[in-house]
Length: 179
Image (cartoon, rainbow, N blue to C red; front, side):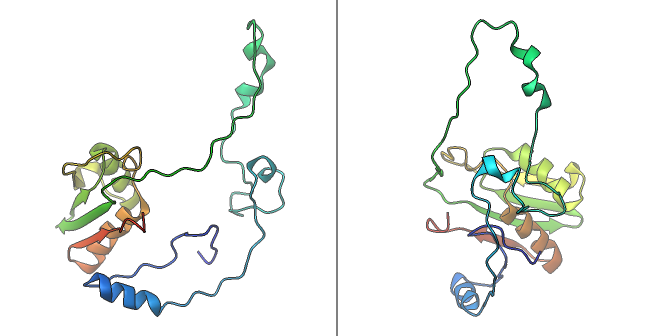
């Protein structure tokens, strides 16, 4: 898109026959980015002149007008107002994420390291412009994901897209460090 919004945002995809070829190719990539103004506090983001997605016109992601209606709590004996903060955390499953894809005609076969085959199928079909019946998702035995293997990740969509474009199977496996 020409804009990098956060550290670690994917901006390049490298396909190779081996992991070492991929690592060598990655060393040849040079990215020149100019620092942008930042938005680091979600409470100030709404009024900030810095808009992360200018086409949206706002940093507001979701609003629930009903929550600001005083009548909502009028019959309550007690109401509590609080600011709750969670520390940043990430799941760390023993098995890093991985996926593979191949096409059988106009039907996608996708192996996903997920805990939700049906959600993956629905999401993949929507992102690739397919009917859900055109997507077969195979989920082998998956250990504890701790929430990190529930959703559809961009890497999975990209693997399926590349498999179609290249007309050959494609796989992706992250390392523990990459996770």
